[in-house]
Image (tube, rainbow, N blue to C red):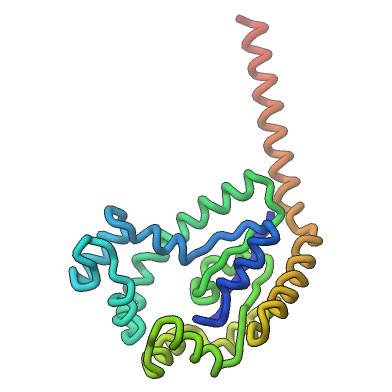
Length: 231
C-alpha cells in the first residue's frame, strides 16, 4: 500500500474531489473529520484548548465553538501555531491508526485528505505523490464568502493564513483544476485515479509484509508442533 496526499486551498473544492475519489471506492482518510473528533469533550486536545484559549471559545453545552476559535487563529499567527501544536499530534496519531487499518484491509493506496498537507511536514516523506485541488483566485474568494457568510476582508484573512496556492501547485505531482464544471473536475479525478490504480508501488510494502507474516506463522507452527511432540 502507498500513501497519496490530497490538499488545496480553502474553498478550492477539495471536498468535492474527495467525494469523487470515494465514489471510485478509494479509501480516504480525512484530516478535517479527525480534527473534529480529537477536540470532542474529554479528550486531551479539548482540555489543552480550554487551558490555552479559555471558556470564550466554547459553547454553553461545552462543545468547541469552531467559528469563534477560527476568528481568533486566522487573525493571529501565534495563536494559530498554538492551536496547531495542540491538535496536530492528536490528528497524526489518529491518521496513523486509520492507515494501519486500511493496510490490513488490503488497499492498494490510501488518500490522506488534509488542508495543511504541505505545512505539516512530518507526513510528506511518507507520501508516494501529492494532488492539489486548485481554482482561480477570484473564484476561491467568492466561494469562501458565500459558503461561510464572510466579509471580503475576513475571507481574505483566511486565505492568506494558508500557504499560497501557487506554492502548493508547484509542489504537486498532480493538479486538479476546479474552476470549471463538476463534470470537468470528475474527468480529471478519473484520470488521476487510473494512474494511481495502475501503479505497482503498493508491492514495495505488501510483499515484505507478506514475507514477514509468512515467516512469523511458519515459525509459530514449528514451535507449536515442537511443544505438542514433546508434551
